[in-house]
Length: 509
Image 1 (cartoon, rainbow, N blue to C red):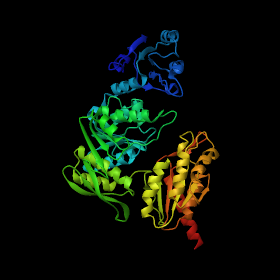
Image 2 (tube, one colour):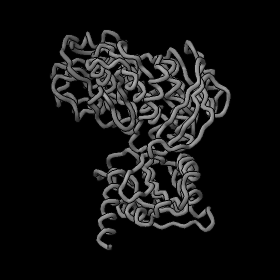
Image 3 (cartoon, rainbow, N blue to C red):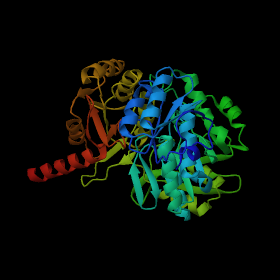
Image 4 (tube, rainbow, N blue to C red):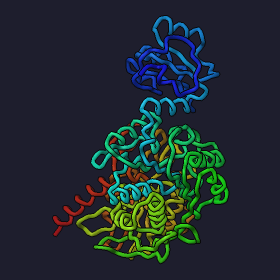
């Protein structure tokens, strides 16, 4: 595509060079630039792309897109690169917004041919999107999925995710692939950072869903404070035909006020009057699978739904998904079937095993989510709850004491282990975890730094009536220790440890 065509729907200022140059991709990282591509300069929190313009040109960039007012690359340098290397240079008012616009233009705005559903909120996005995806597929509507675990492009094609909401180019490319696979709908997690950085700009959502709002993601590199975090979340409603809001959220009145920009606003709740409600909530077992059952109350009918996931918060997720599907015209039968078939990697993921142990892997990675998880499991556990957890390095330090306290308070036994420690030492992370544990009198715990061994020890300790909860990493496929990244999947490690334990026990007989 010629640069002038790529820029045709954007506001820009030509600086140097010929706008007829051909461009076949846009890159944000100069090291990734390929010959014949464009390099767009982003002024990020850790680095400024304008510093790497010469590198990008040396790599073969034909188009350089700078941001108005940048003070890193001089006009003399840009002019010299244009004259000597034949590159075209333009400037845009906002690099992030331009990246979204240019990506949409390049791929022909595929979202216009898809029924888009966007879900934002602090918790519940992943499970709700999987539920909606399963419901749509049960109805016979091919549905794509974009989220923190994986991206499902078609019925038989998926790839692991790098970001909850992909960067604009990757996002538009995924939508184009879905369109080419005859996918009719797409449900996606829309993160606060995705909204902050305009990754979904230009895409119109049929339904925009708000699940809840908790204090998380407030740290360097994410959001500077609660207000910025909240404002970013609210941006979703600016591009929605309908809004669906959980009435059990903090700052509800403000959320409802922001949602008024949508054509229609609906609410759902598991505990109060709303357009969609869950009544008669109870734990049940269907075909040997424990889960939750409730009456789904809609504006036109009531029906029983069963979701094969424990805990009341998954009733909340199922209600969210069922309500969204209703608004998109999915039948009662489609909703019933889809909700009953859902499987979500790393979210209350039950590890089936020959030893009959109750083992769950979950993404709970802060104190509040761990509290909700463990307190919800308690009524179903006839024995002890044994929790394996750690905390990530280079992330909010408030999470550490919180997870320590909640594990100690709601578990019978805790095993503290390594998570993604990144550049920090395990010892420095554990100091703060220990502060939380020691807030609980007579808390029982031990420290096993090696996560393989920690999981194995928990399983070895467990009796048939006990619950083993492996928390913190959920669906994640890797571990980052001192910036050395290697494969580590909690569910896989649990299966390996169970097989080894079963073999050892057979040998003892």
